[in-house]
Image 1 (cartoon, protein in one colour):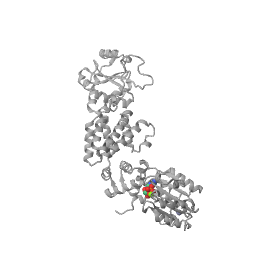
Image 2 (cartoon, protein in one colour):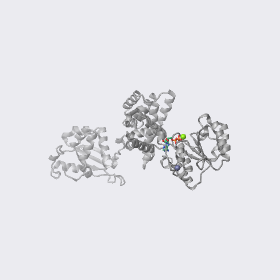
Image 3 (cartoon, rainbow, N blue to C red):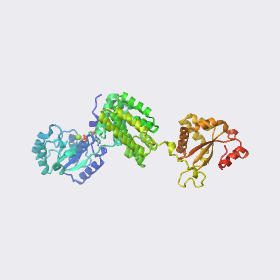
Image 4 (cartoon, rainbow, N blue to C red):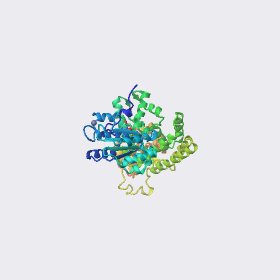
Length: 511
Ligand SMILES: Nc1ncnc2c1ncn2[C@@H]1O[C@H](COP(=O)(O)OP(=O)(O)O)[C@@H](O)[C@H]1O
Ligand SMILES: [Mg+2]
Ligand SMILES: [Zn+2]
């Protein structure tokens, strides 16, 4: 397949097409509109974020045949020459190759000739910090007294290495790494245009692997296409980039929450077997816990800080809910220690395994849901003031009304629990304690349902449904029957009456 590599094909043609550098493009456009162009600009920032592109757009904007503009036409001879890199008025010098000595010498000789077809002569000097001291000096001389028709645009990935004498003569713009979301949007646009089938989570992986460089993201897409043509799957990305899917980290955290170190060790071992780099595993894990921390701390507009696809965002928030902030911070500390150790050992496997065991044992562990449901203090149990006013509550009626739904939800988590609860009836809700009655013959079900883990699941289901932390108490209630339709009318049933008396309850709804 022969095609123009995306990074070249998709070079932005005007400021509107530049992604993620609005702070730069806005100022440049204003300068163009007001005609207040500086003599020299410095574009600083990492590779592949739009420095060269913006330099060329700026050059076109100054020289477009339609007149100085903030949106070059792209069609006139001057615009086309600049786009194709053959304009005699726009001279690009690469400071990195042969360190610019000859070029700067020529520059000094030529700078005095006025532009040929455009209005301005523009020197774009890439990686300006690489120029030799001699070239720097020569450049400085021209910078000191530039002819009015000459402009300089310097670009650098290492602004700290640019001499202060140069810096002080430039207006500086810092280009930022492009947020993953914006990279994904751009890749989506490219894929639509190129008729490439690809899922968003694949694009997110590409964006993540690009480290904020749109150029790198576009080249990865190139690679993927030459690897799998027009229908790109997650597996291809994993293969081509050797990355670890977010899924794996999500699973790891789940295992930590359920304190399942054994499963985590297996997960690590299978990642190893698939040729994954353990250092990268640790790095990815750090990023994952960072996201958990953000989810825990930030309540509004988490998406802006997370750079994750929607489903991953939901999963992260859900997991963050199951942990305390302290546990997350502790985990991050442990990961950093593991990274140090990995460096020392020059291998990540053992530090990662130690980490897994350590995190799964964290102090009180990740928040155990059943520990957080506050059991009412015994002294308060009879107090009429027990549930404080601001505390959320729900009524027995609501539980009764949703009983079928509760059983259904429980069944989805653990089938057997639904079976047990079908024998039971909610009989009392007081002080956020729900009493569930079992008929005498279902004592086995009651006992099994009463296992700590089962109660936890039950309570979590209630919490999810009513958004109230209820404690569940199971009782054998005389006179209850597992066959609901055989339940006698309470007012006629002496046993039920005594139950009502016992709990000081009243009949809200007849079954
Ligand atoms: N901010 C951006 N907006 C749109 N495309 C970009 C951006 N940054 C990089 N690219 C893509 O990457 C390619 C190389 O970008 P370039 O401007 O040369 O980056 P730099 O000079 O910062 O290394 C462009 O042709 C374009 O396809
Ligand atoms: Mg460049
Ligand atoms: Zn033009």
